[in-house]
Image 1 (cartoon, rainbow, N blue to C red):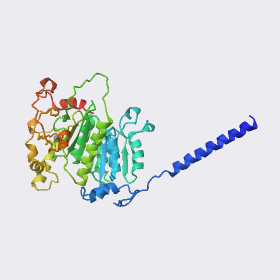
Image 2: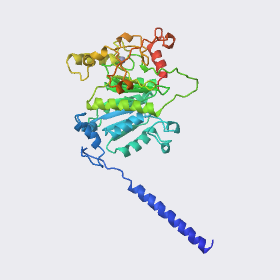
Image 3: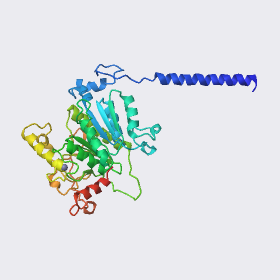
Length: 406
Ligand SMILES: [Zn+2]
């Protein structure tokens, strides 16, 4: 190497060193924000809570700061659950307990939240890493195991029974963001046993519908009271052997948004909570309804909770009352239908016991400044498309229905 070449090489190396030093400095200077002990409503650029606290000054929420007192357990960190965790973290929830036994893979990248550099990490670790950076004030607990196995189920029960940030008692709410029947039943059994309120969520295998459901042990139907309700997409399912389920970040994000909205409304006590809220992407239709508990439910703890709720109601000590809301919604009740064009498929052998009211919120009505109006369609249901419920036991039926849900 000639002297000139050596000098050029040295110059080149010096430039590389300078560039690397620069990168290192930038890395070190990256602002990782400090924890905030008392949240303020002061409007300034470095206050991550100012826009949230404005909900109080706008009169929507009485006391937004209360959000920091709540502990929420999220089971399943898929396309719905991971987004739910991000939203709750950004909202400043007190504590999140994350349950998932899966690992991040490239096949998850059509959904929100996870990034390709996290492939191979457990979903709970990857989530904690990202979420702690977004909001270090939130306390995270991670549980990387399958809650449905016998040993783990007890640990799961114990965790949600003692995980509360403030009291070391029960968590305030459990969110089901799982994709299978067994896990939903496990959550249902744990929540009935421990008397914990929970919210269930799901998206359809064809990726164009979703739902959320608020479960209050003894007050509303539990997951075993009746077969799950699904929103009909109106699209003929083309399901072939070996073909994997479809998923869209949109439907999953919308379902996650609806779920967290309900969580905020319930915890911070504002607005009206829908006990069941469906979403059909094909028609932009959002059916709502309430489902009462089944007095013949196969889950004995559900029956025990039903008795307790009846007693509380008698004594006037119940904080939620389906009947009270019925009175308020008397007008809506005039437009009750069990079948409609986009509708809700209710597959239960005791449909008459389910209190249903559904109403379409349609964009074209809005643009004409009209009130939301439900249109009645007397569409004939093709009997062949309905599941025959008469000669099947409930468990088998629920399994079949669940197979069509993620
Ligand atoms: Zn039940």
